[in-house]
Image (cartoon, rainbow, N blue to C red; front, side, top):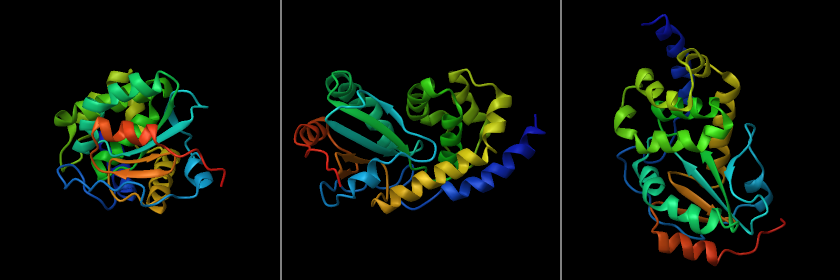
Length: 222
C-alpha cells in the first residue's frame, strides 16, 4: 500500500509536538476543579490561528469552551451521553455558544486532530463525533493511519487528501499553538471546560454542567 507510508512517517514525527502532559486514553480522570482559575477573558476568547469550531448563537450570553483529546475516553463519554442534552437545552435554544478546541494527548490523537481540521469545516462536529464514538476502531498505542482514515473518510475525505493533510505544516503548527495556549490557561488534561471563563476539569454530570451554565457569571470585558 505504501509509498503512502513514507508520507505518513514524517508528520507522525512532527505530531509529537502535539503530544503532551495529562491523562490520555485509559489514564486517570482529572478531578473536577470548578471556578479555581479565571484566565483573562480577552485572552481566553481570542480565536487561535486556525479559527474556532463552534456551534450556537455567536451572541449567546454563555460561552462554553471544551478542550478535547480525540483518544480520551472521558471526552467520548461526554459527547455520547451529555452533549446531546446540552445541545438540545442550551445550544439550540440560543443560550450557549459551544466552542471545541483541540488538546491532543499522544501521537494518535494528534494525527486524528490534524485530519479533523483538514476536513470540510461544516463536517467538523460530525467528524469529531465519529472519532469519539468510534474510538475502539482506531485508538491504539501505535499510530495506525489506515484506521484513522477509516473514520476520516466518513466526512467524504479521500485517501489522497488525508495523506496530504498529515503533512500540512500550517495545521500542525496551528494545533500546537492551540494546545500551548490551553496550557497557559491551566489545561492539564481532558476534558476541560471553561464556562464564561470558569473552569471545570474532568468528568461532569449533566446537572453539574447545567448548574454551571445557569449560574455563569456575566462575560468580563477584561
